[in-house]
Length: 511
Ligand SMILES: [Zn+2]
Image 1 (cartoon, rainbow, N blue to C red):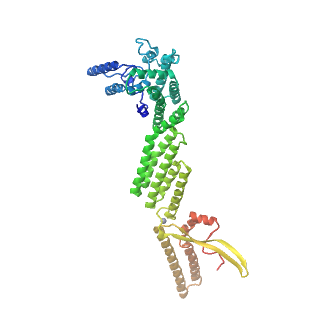
Image 2 (tube, helix red, strand yellow):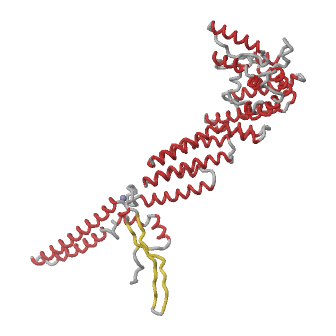
């Protein structure tokens, strides 16, 4: 007894293109002798240098099959089980094989390219065998056209294909004919249950062709068509589990590839942490469009898709953090983590990534010099701004008791900025000091030399103004005036100022 998995092991969107009856141009009920004769014909043709033709006239193949494909098709027909499968995916004659010479108007019409005529004849069939066969032929025709149409409306193509097959599956007389074929084959590899098993397994095979066609659509950048096809699969009477399995199987190669890609990115980032962000960016570039496409094929709340989004997002996050911890550069991880957060599906993973993003943003804030916003901050060059706040006044027997809290808010600074700040302070102080001393000395000299009183007095006055100018130009609390003005905008200080804190060590008028 064959295992079930042996049926339809290789059904995909090429099922009609590869069908041996079509490729080798043989009727479904061809006998072993017919097949031998056809093989001989082809050998003669090949010797004469003639090509193998375009396969069956019922649905000519474009491009035509090459001689190897035809040989392979003939070979395939020797396996009774695969032959039965192939018979299911090809046109059946209205009459039993025993009725030799009987006309089949519909197949004649199809062979002459009069597709509408064939369809019409199958839509109004004679009763009995002809009716069962007609339903099946309509399914085959619609399905082959849906799979092989390069364009056209997805719904117009696929809805009849799936509905006709649904009818075939529900038509007992057709399956009686299949059972009769099994008996005729009279092969020990086929048993009395074969027809029933084929009938049971066929829905999965049909859904597999549609699911793979949907994946092909989205991969070719036609997500909307993929979405329509996936929706149709769900709404023409096939059971949900079969549809879901087919869709999941169809996307498996893509999901497996993404998972492997993300895993190896983490491995490589672990081996050389400074490549972490490049690895993460590569995974994102690859995964983002694919995950969007999978969203078109699979329902959005499909657990498989959610799990995959979370998994990729987490691995991308890992790469970014490995990079940040190694390089102390948090500007690149920040962008990567934002994309990872957008990619994640569930709240749990989104929250986890958001926490890391907050940390990265903090690291970025404290890791970059606030003054030049360019060079990394240096621990030894941090500028500290003294602040006080939470001032309270208590009245007691001794008078007013003022209390306050104070802190030194660290502002990240690079060594270069720190040196520039100190240097400028010294220069202004030195120039101011020398200027004042020079002015005063000159005034004394002028008085001693007996200059009119107004000249040294004016000079003395100018020196005093110069002193104040120097003070005004000098450093404020260790910073050039301009730099000092930006300190209030440093976010942690901004927060304190907004909360009522002030610059300085203590409230005015306190001891
Ligand atoms: Zn700097």
